[in-house]
Length: 223
Length: 317
Image (cartoon, rainbow over all chains, first blue to last red; front, side):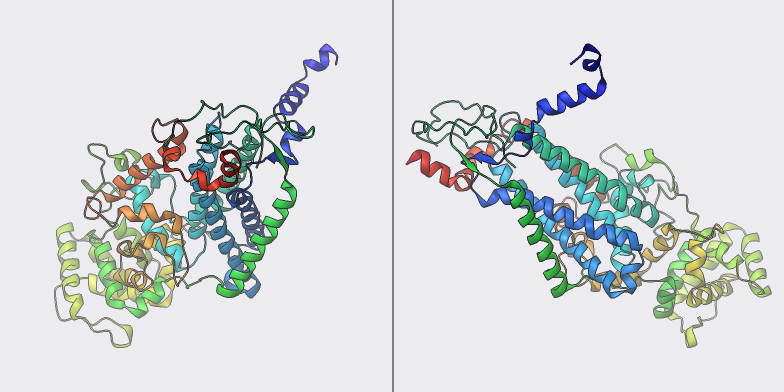
């Protein structure tokens, strides 16, 4: 590589990205042997549910906020959206509890936990604005009650839950973008630092003499 | 717990065996399962969609409650009229956290003059009613004390009102122009005109801001009674509920929980205190990895041994 190429911003970004996450680490086909519990499924289940949420929400958004009130097919997609949200939170809560019990922040994985926790909090905001955007009695009541909490600390002056236009924008654009960006960041951190290993056993046997296969990453990594 | 043989380096590469793990296949299966579950739940339960309360439906169903709310908006004694920021600057109306008054610091950013916005301005839009115009002129020309006396007398008499064909008939009293004004406002509301007038009050065609009509609705008992029937009140853990028998926002259980117990339950500052408490707890939740004691708690709980039971069975024999 020529000195000019080395000075290119594009080269710098590519080398940093590939150095941090080489392909075999970004998408490995092997995992440490301890990755053998159902609890590991809930992370990917959360992402799968999020995709169903975004896909159904996109259809609802393309047709406009009135559509689902007046057509059967609109109601169907609204129901998909609702239940996908419930599944998303269920999977995410199980995932978070699992990671808590594993103390999954060990070994320099604090940011991985923090991005997951922030994703949970931002997702609550996304769901809340969704309830406010329904244009039915639920929306009216949740807005009339929710305003008091936000007004009491001054947030209501800027985030007005009884303003449908503002809440709809937050729900269909700003907060989904934030959730998706946080999930991407979280997954990249997981890939970079790998799945946290178990606590040491009470009375450890000598480690089995089994070196990692050649295709395995040089460092423990998992979903 | 027995002592740990050696201090582990949890960031070091895993020295033990690896197994095949098809991440892409796992993702595709998860996507199919989640989409399938969402479809099954949709077919079984659909989703709630209770129609919104309109000012028209309220004025028709409970004209007495509508007029009680409207007259308190007129004389400035309604919940919104005395709310404080961000709607107005009513003294001592804000919630505080000790000496800190965040509600006042934010200021009046969504100004609402309840008498003008909810009563006088909509009445001005009613055309060809000379009697109403005279009533409005008399009301606005009167001293504030007299305005308040008329409205107070009207409010006091409302429980004895009858509504033959939806028109209010009150016992004789000194209501001044307030009685014809309220009759006209009720007629406007029952026709559906007030719903539109409150949304399009600034004469714009397109509108997405329902602040005024929704705050007006929330001042009436009719709105609250409907919510109570759907188990949505704060005392019914309503913050996490939705209409019908649906799970709602169950993830707000902790936020809702604080409203059910003292000292928050009866506190006039409950909203502010709980908001700040949840903010602190949320921050702690995010920062668990960096909080001594809390970050080591999972080791003492021991649940990890169930999660990694295959691993420990292998290494401990």
